[in-house]
Each structure stands twice: as C-alpha cells, then as structure tokens.
Amino acid sequence: MTRKTTGKPPPSKREQAAIRQAETRLKERAPPILTGRTGKVISAPHDDLAGWSARLFDVLGTASGPFADNSVHQLAHASKHHGGTPEDDTTALDAALALVAAVAPQNEVEGALAVQMAQVHALTADLLGRARQTDRTDHLAVYGSLAVKLARTFAVQTEALHRIRGGGRQSIEVRHVHINNAVIGDVIGAGGGVAEIGNQPLAKPIADASVTALRGEVEADGQALPVAEGEGADPLPHARRRGRERRAER
Image (cartoon, rainbow, N blue to C red; front, side, top):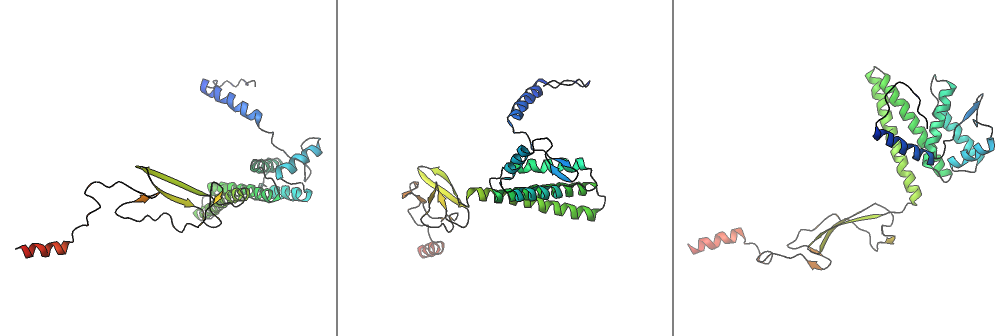
C-alpha cells in the first residue's frame, strides 16, 4: 500500500509495525455489504444484483425475500438523518448493515434481534449527539435519559442473543479454596432451569450454598480441618459460674 505524500512526518517504527498488522487483519475480513440507490429504491451499488442479494440475505440470516426487504427498510428508516443528504442516509444504512453482519444471525429470530440492535444503536447515537449540541438543561436531561435507557436495552439485547444461541442452558460455576487438603467453596449458579456441571445435571437444587455454618471445626469431603492442641476440644468457661466458684472459695 503506497503512502501519499502530505508533508506530514512519517509514522514511528512501532506505528508502522501496527499498521502492517492491521493491514494483514483487514485483508482477512470479508468486504462490507454496501447499498446504492436508484431514486428512492435501495439496490446494489454494482451490476451484480443477484450476487448482492445473496450477500444481503446471508447477512440477515434468512432466505425470505419479504423478511430481507422489510429488514432493510426498517434499518433505512431508523438510520435516516434528519436534514441529511441521500449520501448521508446511504452511509448510515451501510453502517447499520455492518453491525448486523457483525452479529452474524443464523435465522430470522437472530436476524430480527440484530436489526433491532442496529436500530437501537443508531437512535442512541442520535440522542447522544442531540444532548451534546443543546444548551438547555431540560433537553439535555431528556436526551441523556433516553440515551442511557437505550444503551441498557442494547446490553439486554446482547444478553438475549447469547441466551438464544446457548439454548437456554443453565451453568454452574464452582470455585474452591484448598486449605490443608480440605475444600471450602461457594457454588454460584443461574436461577431457574436445571443446573448443570460439565453437562451433568445436579440431582438436587441448591437452595443457598453461599451460607457457611460457623462451628468449632470446618468439615469438607468428610475430613475435618486440623485443630491445634488444646483448642476446640474443651468448652469455654461460663462467666457467671466462674464468678460463683471464686466467691465460694473466699
């Protein structure tokens, strides 16, 4: 890749190395799907309409023409700039499709969720821009509050996508602390469903494994922690009874 002469200093050696690495990774990425317009009709930016349509269907995770057409129009409407040029709208639509492609939906359910995520992202960015440009605190409060809510919605949508792809399976994370061959651990699991460890369902649900009973000695796996000599075996003296014994001696 040839570098144009701009009169600016060249990048440092470390930055040149980072540039070469970025160029290598960029070559491995699939080219983004772009859109063109014929009047108000969204179409391919080149003469291979069939190939462009195949890529569009694949990006949206569908083989349905109506689903693909409706999804593209939803994205175009959500990413449209108020007062912007047609070129601005095309750029915004291409950016939304890039986000959908990054989600890589495998079916219409994931495709619909990916389209919603792109719409929420576009609206969040628009509200943040409005909040940055206004001089009125009441407008800032409204725009900022809505942007925060939408950002949380985007996070929830991301979690929903992970749950859909995980099949709704629950998992248990077990953390152990080993002390003198004894195991003291707390079990953390997601609520609801059947808990599993290593794809093996637990025989009984765990009511509350984070509660640890405090006793004279901690037992784990049937073995007791070692107790120092003279500790733990003898009961503690009763304060009142000890006082009575002293008075009797007098």
